[in-house]
Image 1: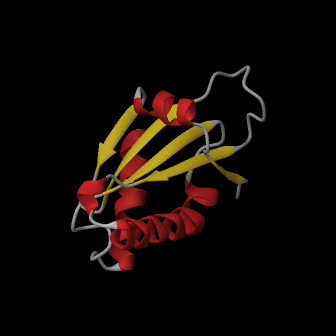
Image 2: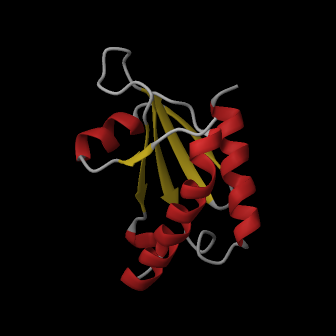
Image 3: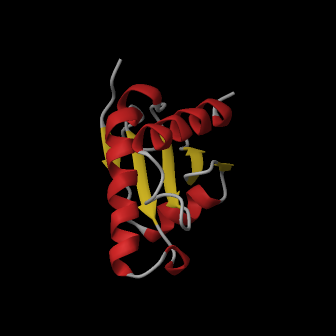
Length: 116
């Protein structure tokens, strides 16, 4: 079953997710947090993307974030859990250069470990 995915935009949501679970993979770091049950829209999956300046210049950071957005667009509606927030963090030298199927398997592996 697929669910709607919305993008995180508020800094407070990113900071809250940073206090949740985290799972690192070769291509990215994934942070996950189950929202309180009284939060609005409990069936929604929310996701945010970030890359620090360690990833590279603006071109490199934007390329890494584009790849993370595409991986999330393909996989989160089916493999994410409703009522959860996810933040995908780009990894230095790996996110932009890693083959796309490997990035997809990285996200699937991280989700499986976070929800185990």
